[in-house]
Image (cartoon, rainbow, N blue to C red; front, side, top):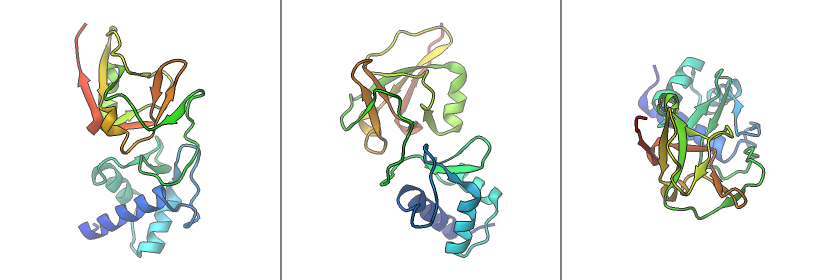
Length: 186
C-alpha cells in the first residue's frame, strides 16, 4: 500500500509527463493523447523509485486523481484529460476551428442511459459525432435528457472548437463540474 505522499508525487509526475513533457521521457502520445500504460508504469518506477503495480496505478487513477486522467476501455493506455501545453491531433471533426470565447452555456441532448457513464467517467466524452453542443437549448426528445454546460467556466481548462457552417461547438471531454443535468420524463 502506497503512502499518501507517494500517491501525490506519482499523480504530479504523471500529470507533468502526460501534459507537458512526454517527449523528454520518450513517451509517445497517440492522436487522442493516450500513452502506453505499461511504459508509464516503468517510467514511474525508474523516476520515482517506487514499486507500483498496474492495479495500484489504476486505483490511483480511478479513485484518487479527481478525474484528471483517463484509461482507455481495455486499460492499456492512459492520458491526461486537459491542461496540456503540448499539441497533439485531437481528431477534431472536420470544419471545426479552435476558439477562445464561447457562450455562457451550451446544451446537448444525451440518452438517459448515458447518464451513469458520464458520472463514472467523471465527465462527458464527446468523441462520438452523435452528440452536438449547441448555443440554443434543443427540443427534448423521447428517452433523452438535456445537458447544460457551463462553457464559460469549462473553456478555462478545456479547448473548444466551433463550426460556423453548422453553428455547433465541440470539446473532446467536459468534466462533471461543468455539467448541469436537467432530467425530464416524457
